[in-house]
Image (cartoon, rainbow, N blue to C red; front, side, top):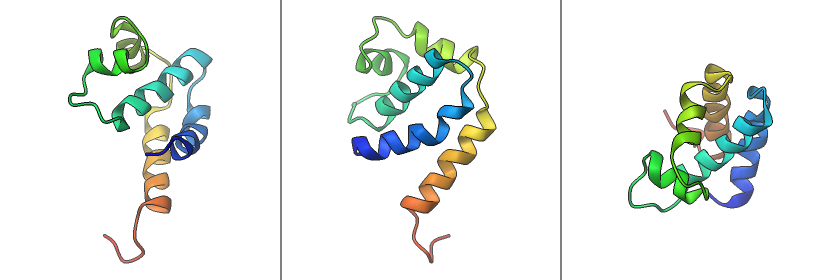
Length: 89
């Protein structure tokens, strides 16, 4: 995913996060997921984003206040709009 696409996805989901810290960390999380990392786990995603431990990423996924269903729907809609094919299933 090129940086412009990542920015567009983040712009779409940003409103689903109530606070700026989880919003920014979500961008770093997604960036790590699409990065060419050999392994993707809490440690590698945290290191990719410049953090020294996975605590922040784990906090995002476990405790942060965000609309999980809304993010899912937004990402699905983005994928269908930009990566899907008209005749695809």
